[in-house]
Amino acid sequence: MTVLERRGFVIHQGVLDRAAQESLVANLRGVLAQAPLVQPVTPRGRPMSVRMSAAGRFGWITDRRGYRYSETHPDGQSWPPIPDAVLAIWDTVSGSDRAPESCLINWYGEGARMGLHQDRDEADFGQPVVSVSLGDEGLFRMGNLERGGTTESIWLQSGDVVVMGGEARLRHHGVDRIRFGSSTLLPRGGRINLTLRVVT
Ligand SMILES: O=C(O)CCC(=O)C(=O)O
Ligand SMILES: [Fe+2]
Image 1 (cartoon, rainbow, N blue to C red):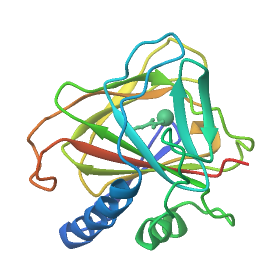
Image 2 (cartoon, rainbow, N blue to C red):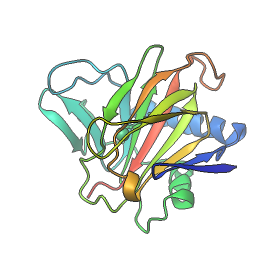
Image 3 (cartoon, protein in one colour):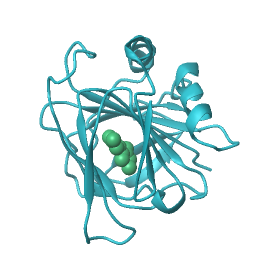
């Protein structure tokens, strides 16, 4: 396992071996059977290219009414619990004494991306965000606290974990593109990113 630091983002490479990735995917299949992926729209009505679901007390959602955390899936049901194997990753890398209250599940198919943004819908920016990559490689871009300025990028591989804490907690970041078909982990290809957060 290698740990890199870029602008305060701590990138743990190779946290999950292939067997651990496969068992996580099996857990996620159970979560997604209860809380199906949806294609969200931004408050301005633009469909996002990423499909989303969640586990935990809160899921992060977006629709015409805005970005927010919700205790229910858009279909009205509570989110399933966060799998233990996912909680264990948080315990290993977060350095937090709290438990994550939300596990956002992002699925990137061919051509999907996520524009540069800050994660700022949580109450306590002293708590880190932990992000887990599974499946196809994704080009992760890291920027600044303000919009604009220089950025740097790194390809995230299946099994890598990024911790956004401290000075990186409010930095802009995004995923420019994925290398569709670069991994055999997911039967239909694509990339899954799990984002763990303390919300309240
Ligand atoms: O997919 C990723 O690696 C990042 C996801 C992200 O930034 C988010 O969901 O807020
Ligand atoms: Fe984010």
